[in-house]
Length: 265
Ligand SMILES: [Zn+2]
Ligand SMILES: [Zn+2]
Image (cartoon, rainbow, N blue to C red; front, side, top):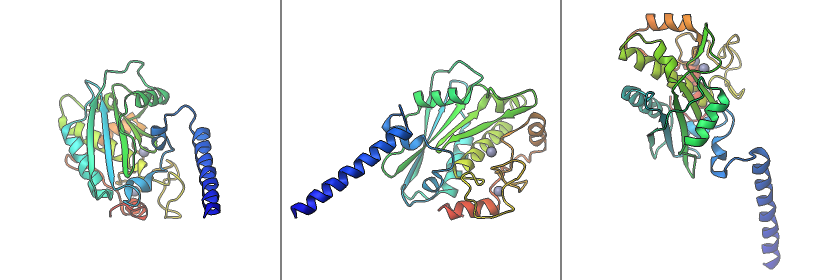
């Protein structure tokens, strides 16, 4: 019995050492409780979609005085998540307003710093947390012809460039704002769900990922068609031709990939 305990103690100690070394090496200077939310894009797709390890999900929406998403967008996101992911113990959306960051337009490093300072919801126990920041400016990568509407940049982190969305909406066309905002948020969530082929595990060997616009879907009316980072003129045309009440949804190829990772069909 003593021998067994000794062996167990050595074994446990070794395991702890391995785990703590691994954490230290991979995540220098990151607070421990943030580690699970500082991983690469797409690696948590199954954790988000299935109920295997996480039975609950929280989405924290962070915005400034001028960038709060419309109530319709928030409602649409609640519905979208409920339709696609398996969380038997609930999906909650929380909101937080922060002081307006300066330094805009933003680099991705600045967006990460804002998250580090203001995000309050982190994955804990069987409750996985997502974060979405509605930025009070644009991406510094924007040019006269191309823009980024939003970006999924880590396993649970999204930025939406609200001022850029607004620049495509004429006057007080609230329906247009709701549409472009909802499409952008849902498209970026699709990237957190691992679409398309983000971590090279697409169940379709061919015919799904767009060869010209990697990590996006070949189907033109799919939510994951290349559209988030695109040309200004293409977005303008899309907004003009938009059917008032239609938000693109996942096509069958994308849905099959989500289902393979535990999402709802
Ligand atoms: Zn995209
Ligand atoms: Zn698709």
